[in-house]
Length: 227
Image 1 (spheres, helix red, strand yellow):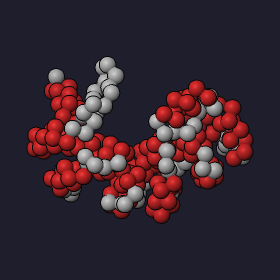
Image 2: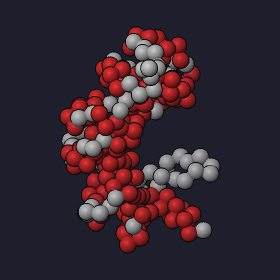
Image 3: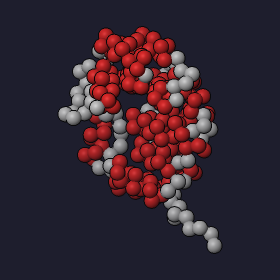
Image 4: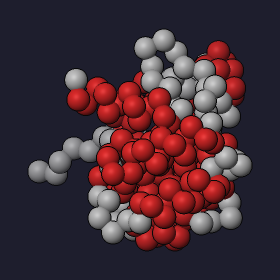
């Protein structure tokens, strides 16, 4: 007897559900961060859980261009099913921060072409695409640093992070933090670069949260690991 699959929904049915979930208050908060959707992410994840993995539906939801639909697509897709060129097009289409973040973290990092794309995106003239290359580099820095030129990465960060556009600057700063936290032999230089460039030094940080300012961030995480 055939296994029962979740009832397949059309794109129109899913879009109608997303429209019902849209909350103007959530949309107003998200818009301050550059995200143009009003769906509670917990409810979005619940919908994804109900739909289960559906690669074809995911592709069609992505094609709508709607931010909530694209976030849902990234939750129900099969990350390894995408080709290299397909992901390259998708990252260039992903203009809102949350879609870009989920695409890189939930899909590209799990795709067999991730290293090839990391190298292709790292120096891309589009700073948003380059930020994806840096995010994948930070993943290598922390989990698989063999073969990476860490002093060379610090050279680029030292020369370019101060004047980089916001999202690229943030990604470079995460890489700086990752090098300083995970690689003790480069820690002093990473902290020194952070102190001199002062990137995110005045970033508002909630009580109990760690500042993204690299010298504070590196020092705090290392301290916690040794406590």
